[in-house]
Length: 215
Image (cartoon, rainbow, N blue to C red):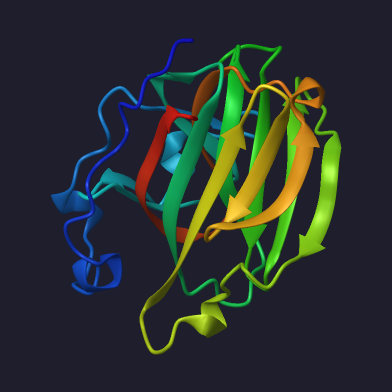
């Protein structure tokens, strides 16, 4: 089993407190060595409003939908992948965000990955990207473990933790420590690069994306 967790950063402060101050992209730096690929052909990072390193983690405000990853971040075998993310005011847009796993040929024409996303309103979806196709493994499904922006209790953002536990026989999908779906491992291709996927026009803080061995 090969397993790297190069993206984990300890959360030293609560993100809503950390991000309370005004953000200026000019004062921050783009994460070194990170890769970005957009769904729309011809789109570039000039179309992003913000993608910056902001410990703990990364802050981004998207233009077009896309994936974000560090090329050294790979996982295989039995592992747990986890992402902690804070959603800021989506202004009524129900765009999706979450984890992707099993990335291959991410900069080429045969890109492939599996992704597990949530959206404001309390739904999740599980899909694959295979070249230009995006077959659905589980369609949009409501679950009360997913926190919506309306659940933020006076804070400027709402926190969700997405996790995928990839075992030898089955794969569990969790939100905020609650299982929302389970599938046979044989149905999924999860070995490869991991990172996060964000659809268009969202303002997020991703405090950590990490993997660890599943025991």
